[in-house]
Image 1 (cartoon, rainbow, N blue to C red):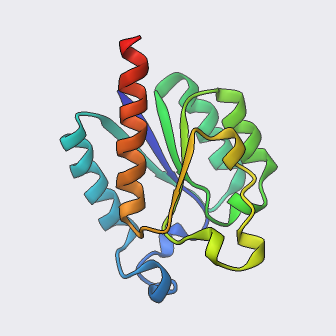
Image 2: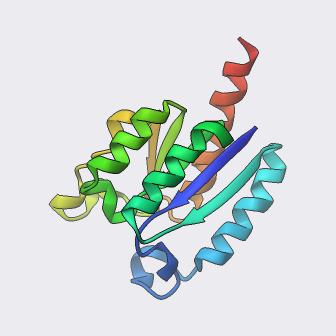
Length: 148
């Protein structure tokens, strides 16, 4: 089983950008932790980050043939990108939306997710642990669907 973990715009700035909200973990450290956790879960992951909406769309489209599921932190594109929403819908594979902060407790414009209604679930507000919760939940869903 393979899960693609996508990080969107500005996520490459983790550890520098607003550490009071996102902590001091870097993207590289987060990815290292996720790879270690994926071994515990018995799954394969691929990580990807881009600041470019079209590149994220293309990666999602490629996942149709290369991944069983997607964990995505579209970051600011969560609130603006119909293109990312449509790509998730088009590939029709289980997808979990993830955010380090609780988007529902932030600025009004961050409370609306354009992608949540085409995702299997949403995890937010647990910092870097949000990713592990998303991976665990998605791997459980995928394992159960393979049993049917």
